[in-house]
Image (cartoon, rainbow, N blue to C red; front, side, top):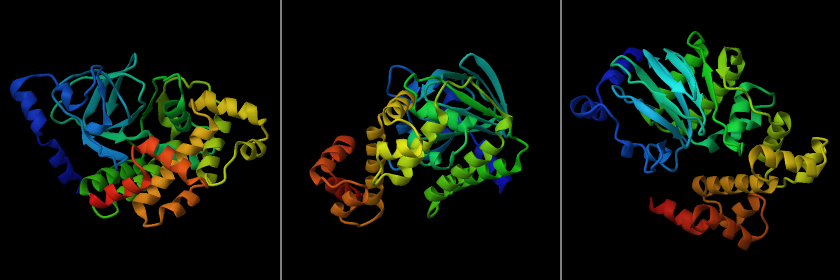
Length: 322
């Protein structure tokens, strides 16, 4: 199976054929609509998906750019040479590189045998990851600083894990599952990705990384975990009591680390959960509003429309038409 996949990935794509025949530069419009070179997830990832894999385009240098998503480079075969921030990295077969939205990198042209898989991951996918990141580690520091840090520090994590069989197996399962698009594939991919994060945490000693930026790690992780588990009735006062912190001090730390207030984080979680229920159940809208912790229907309609540009009823009707 792995040999068949490699043969498939070695084939020249249509984009690569054009590059080989006509020019040795990429067409930026395939990757972004912005004047700055910020690769957009919308070019590759449909709105209802959180994770996608895309084979890196060979035979051409990629100039300095950022992404509006979290990217993981994985070398399936060969190598990938790039400059990340000010550091040159030669990624070897089986190695992983996490890049957050705020770091620039430029990539040297890959040869035919260099097969690199790019994981395109929406930041909100990692919301649930915080529910089991109970100890301080490089990955949780990376995610908190990448997803919430208002200073927009560029960061990366470079994992030299080519010899770790459990990690290699999980990555290949994710690739195969996304390519197959079988029943329940999206849920399976999310599960595998969660397991991959756990395995990487267990092998954090094999990671090189940018210098960590200060964050009250324990307080923030516990706050995010509390919101995730108690969003229906969550309150800052209850959380501050559980963490033995003055509520005003905790509020300040949450705002400092995430650039959001406790109330804003809680609202985002409730809206995300309401959208999930609208998509996956036929539960009455009034029941959903109650399930996510609101008792003011008109207020919920207003914030839902402000977030998704349509009312809950319109959102569900649009889903039905699709």
